[in-house]
Length: 307
Image (cartoon, rainbow, N blue to C red):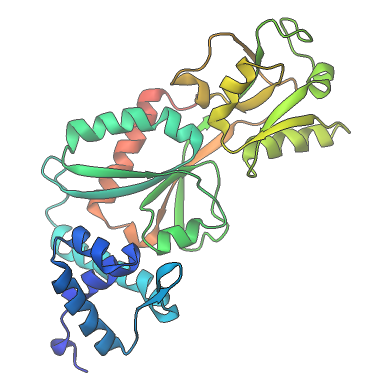
């Protein structure tokens, strides 16, 4: 088949159908009728000799070949945008579109509010879709599928050959306990730190790994009493119990942290948590994402770097 006989607009439909995993959602995303999207999908199935989507008890799922094609198609579309949109640059004031950004809990609490304010001021027509629960093990897949455009996280990706990262800031740890705690005075000693109960986070995170490793090097361990799914839940739980928590201080700087918390640096030396901005190599030349990376770095500069 000659390239001249291929409708390259079908690639736009293919990307939308695979990302949304359905015709109806893809139609809304593309601004097309469901009939037009279904017709385009039929043409794609014929030209690729593949069903692309299969109906299962769990809903529509892409075929193995379709999954392999998605990152290739997304790369082609991004390069095509660069050809036609790269020269004049990105005009945030008139731009429309979606930015998909993955943020861990610390970044959501500290960086997200000022970032949203900047977007509303400078790019009022764009939409920001925030995803939480950034995981190193799935980060490459998230980018390849087009689920994420940028990630701000303490985790570096496990498979980093196609992902680029740059250092944004570092966050010092802080240990919290309830004011008036019956076993702790004004300062929390290392001896008392390993004796009291702790609240920790369920999924592996840099804070808990660093703490437990530092204690193990001294032949010590702490007593985990409660495990929660997200670190943002720690302050309110500590404020109402006799538990202790250690977390990046960024989580306390913005938001409604309880006022009855005592805090200090951990009684064991811990290196600050580095926070990275990560993007896929195919987006290196994207004017819009280059602009967004600049806005994120401007937010960090306003916050003063280390928090």
